[in-house]
Length: 499
Image (cartoon, rainbow, N blue to C red):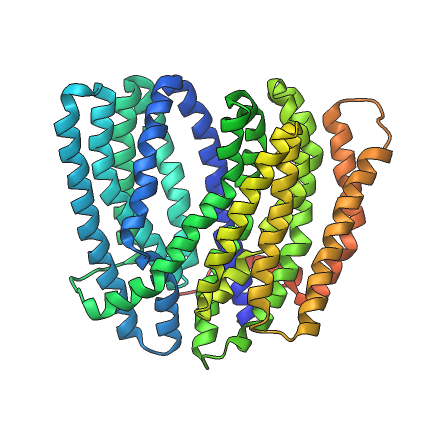
């Protein structure tokens, strides 16, 4: 199997697991809110903040493992990869136990002054903190060793197996049933991965191995934290200046953003170890030129289909299911073009990390956060409301992509090649935005249901955009490789190999 076909196979396998999991989790999240109600949902949402901040206790070792294990394997140093894997596991296990124990002690000390749901929630968090870190590390290791089939199966198992006990326990025992079921599910997930993958973590701890990992990974973790702040600027500023009602309308955009950016995020997860593997062969960053070029084009040509689907169908879905959220439709449509650029930065961030040039992102991220916050506050004060915020976020998303592009592309391409790639991406952007606006403006309103009208509009967009997809196959062979992979999978199921 060629390297390109191997990567496409890994992406297709992992993507199937991710999107199936998203579908299951979406249904569960709706039912859970119904069973828990607003008060208990608020309790759990508040407690989850602890888990969000607890991930920084790994001091960047998670981020370093994703780079150093595949790099060591590419260098034909499996023993070093194992030492890194085991050292980080025991480091994470020990500091998670210490942190979890500290939270439990704080909960016991505060018990007289807090409600029972909050007390038992803190006790649950203290246990989940350990279990969650172990499970997430298992998944990091699977991806670092490029075991994407197993990683995909683990994701689907987690959602499919956990759905019934989580819903049943929450339905019968409210928040306490939810606590028990969540803890039980993480425990079972950990056992499932251990048994199915054969992962072992014999005790091994080396400060020699750990120190360079933290030195390398800590700045990546800081960049990741700054990225979270940048992406959350609108949800910080809107409640502060416009109130929670407007934030509720804007949540349509946030929901779309979560699902649309999951595709490029998933692509990065799969490509990351392949980047390290390729780079380790000669330690020459220019060897990654083809990876960067083809992944950028593939994303630029595929994303418009996903964005157009949200653009055209959001109207009818909101009118049919969430009519009270109609004021959020216009900001959503303004933000969608920005998500095109926000989704294209991942491969350049991966390139910078691979080449150990990621520190250059820190001042750029600080400047973008300040600029985005300043512009968003200014348009609100000028009376432009949610559409103004969405417009400013779209503008800063473009700058966000441009910064990553300029810092990363210069490592692998000369100025002419970089300019041609940038203009190709920008040309696709202009075409897909112009097509959506033209179809929406000139397409006959017609008769029948809004859903049928939106389906017709989306169909017309796909026809107009088809030449780009055909050209993508000619240049990268993406669709041909996918068809070959599906044929291979079907043939194996129909004619299993004899033992």
